[in-house]
Amino acid sequence: MIINLYNLFYLIFLFYIVCFYSIIIIMKKHIKKGFILLFTGLAFISLIIFLIGNERLFLFINHGLVNQYLDFIVLYIFIPLFVLMGIIPGILFVFKKDISGFFTLFSGGFCYIAGNLIKLIFKMPRPYAVLSDVRIIGPWHMSQFSFPSTTTMLAFGLAFAFFIEKRNKLSHIFLGLACLVGFTVIYTGFHFPKDVVFGVFLSSVFVFVLKKVKDKLLNL
Image (cartoon, rainbow, N blue to C red; front, side):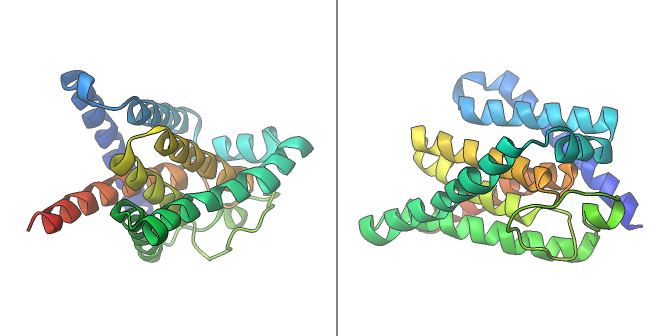
């Protein structure tokens, strides 16, 4: 039952990608390049997962790309950079009274909490519980379930919200950092690629809804 629901959710995501590209064709001039590049990447990764399999792609990233230099970059450069995704919106809200900073933090927190609730529905095990010889490094929180990646949902919840609020160069950097989060949680052995892909998908939906609610409340 859970596996069927899991696969159904994946088909819904693919349908979402098809709809997104239909919108691009119709409204190409009005869609920011950052989102186009991001969803192009998601569509490409989804195709790879479909062709070679979720577990094989995980093993390629978790084992095939391993080297000491990338380990150092992931642990001591990427992870500290991720913290900025929370610090910068916090500074904007606390010191500049910028509502976009609060919205960014709220969206990230909402996506993270929602992701943890979704985990309780699917109850998909982590890679180390399914595969042997999974390489685990890094300080990530080791909860029982894997799907979806709440770390990815937090990162993209922050990045999507900041992007649609600011739409500047820094917001593009946020999207780039969020993508690195998705790669990092696979490389460090904590999540399958599907966990990350769905985390991005769910965050985009949640932030879109939250943005609509926020705009309506401010216009009352």
